[in-house]
Length: 587
Image (cartoon, rainbow, N blue to C red; front, side, top):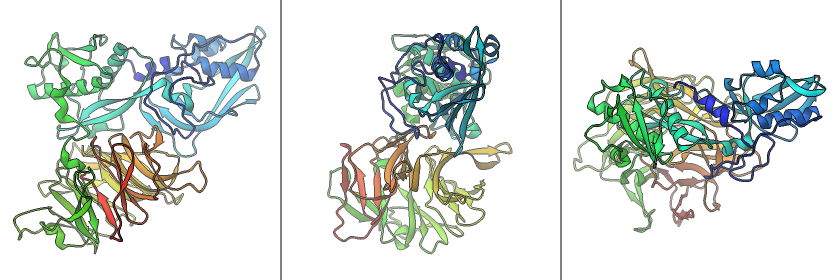
């Protein structure tokens, strides 16, 4: 069944309507701050139009009834017969900043004027609207049997921002990075009121369609073209039966296991286990019928492993290891003087995901040096990569590929990747007139996180991008830039985190507000303060990675470091007049 996810989104959206006060779940303000884990939703039955209502009340009721899950029958009662026949609610979903004065009378109808926050695309993608984008929608009215009715409607459905969390739940489709050793999440949105079977069906159907435009050909799906499920994915006692057609029957054993991993990970987030067949036979004949999730944990995009939680840093331009964050020992900065990097003064420092090697930008900004952090071979030299101009902090992916962005302050910044075998490969990128301030590759080597300086506004902003290929895979390019449109100013840094992205910035909704640490989804669809006690310092930079056990570490504006403990309290390293430390985690 090849139906776009948007059809289900639009059929199930807004059970409570735009003008209804929710009594459960999360209320989002126009800047989309304040998410909460409760996604149970509130069901308020859509009501038909009351007799003799005025124009404003009619359109307000229409926006409420637009959520009718029964094929929009109630919403169409607010319309003339011609308008009801022409209306295409499945065309798009516009999310707008709902305010009391959003609706005004205009000529022979009602005007909806509001800040446009995002569009939910055909695949359920959250696509942030450009800065200052507006939702200007006109609903023409006409009297039918002396009652006002909507006579023309722009294509699509419309969702007030304070209803998003009540009606939609973020879910991930999972695909593989090019080396096929790590899953990459591709976030989409599903209605919260779907049954377990409906949610499983929609997730598997969307997964089999391949990645959304956000990831493009940067990832791999092991589902061959034409792979489909047999009508639906029934669930019983927490087990979903995924019956694939014969298109996947020709897969090799290893590719079958990878396809199973994609399906199992995608369904696991709705607490459903998977039983997968191809043409009626088990996809993995040597495995249990119901596939254990633990059989596929090695593909975890959060990169399990103790090395990811080890904190490193620079102190007086020399490489260090910071110990004591876990309370098992005294907090201290230990010189990494057992490797060749110690001999060089560093401008910035990056560490491999295994924590056994690192790279520095030398203080003269002329080269990037790569070497083991500790080695018994005292004569072993660091590998040098020549750089030009302002060079951002390098970044490692899970294949030990080293990503280097230099010439950052010039007209044409240059992105290169030094592969683990020493090959240096250029990556095509065009930042336009804006300047990259920081660059961090995700462990999967597919997704990139950037802080950019806007030439037009003079402000920093955060965006994501994807590493894709062209010319049959011969050329790498950084593309699909998605500015997150956060309600923040004075942004100084951003980093990957187990919950999405950590951003250091000040709220644009509060005058003269100080920088704080914020959490945002990777698609920019939510923003909240980092949970925990209020810090008594001014954040400047952040160290983090996607590992679930990594503690966020912040460097304040005096150079001192602080980390958020597991009990959500800030712990500081005693300054005692010591030199500033610039923290970094593996990645």
